[in-house]
Amino acid sequence: MTNRVCDILGIEKPIIQGPLLWLTDAKLVAAVSNAGGLGVLGFNAGQTTGTKSLDETLRRIKEEIRKTRELTDKPFGLNLAPTGDLATDKFTQPTLELIYAEHVPVVAYVGPVMPELFADLHAHGVKIVYRYVTPSVENAQEAEANGADIIVATGFDEGGTVPERTVGTLSIVPLLVDAVDHTPIMAAGGITDARTAKAAMVLGAEGVYCGTAFLASKESRMAETIKQQLLKTNADGMLMYRALPAFYRSLPGELPNQLMALDKAGATNQEIFNAANRYEGMRQGMLLGDLSKGYASFGLGISNIHTIDTVQEVVDRICADVIAE
Image (cartoon, rainbow, N blue to C red):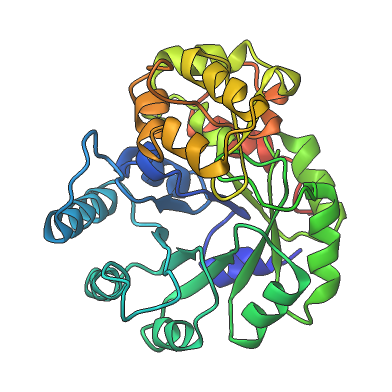
């Protein structure tokens, strides 16, 4: 059986590792690509500290791209998150120039559909894996009309920035599959083993887009203490609280417990987001393992993760039944 996701991306297995902000690096991304999937570098990949310098940010990304190339000769991607207004978006255009200069073959595009960016990426031979934070029929159709190569249907089961609409993965996947005419759909949210991946494929997905499963790998740079806490936690042990843009979920801990209390007390999404130390909270909680200053966000598929395995084992486990022979 030919798989369109594999054909489009030039990979062996229809699985993409989500960008994961601070939590990717060349080692993880190359391991995913070498295992047959598509690894993707996120913002701050390989870093332990932030910088407010655009030049320094781009230098760091370039360095991680080149490290990845030293570890794999397979395709990999880079996260791209345009705001929708290039006049005020100081990051997207320089990032595009870096992508073209370094010949990165794929972008994991998160944000509003911008026809001029889609056209520019394609003119430079870059494939677009399009994922909107809160997917909808209208957004998927707009992405298809402008030439997205692959569209990701993200369900409320995911970790990280959870969709604003509480539509689960098993509902959003067939909705978007039926909404588009010809673009392959990948499923994201709660997919961590062969059962969940096969269910997504039965619903019409042609691949899976995973984050939590790869965080629970030996190559993941996530703090070991958080990996061990993940193994001890099921979906019903996760905390959920409001924060910009809508919801977040986390392992229990000192700060996450406080965020839950703020939510119950009626604090605004902005107030809770600020109390979570914004995205710095992910670095503190997941990279450094400090849940007194940060949070640890995972998808509901943690219930199916019982061991910390190599990336190759993770890919093989998830993709065991996704393509019929």
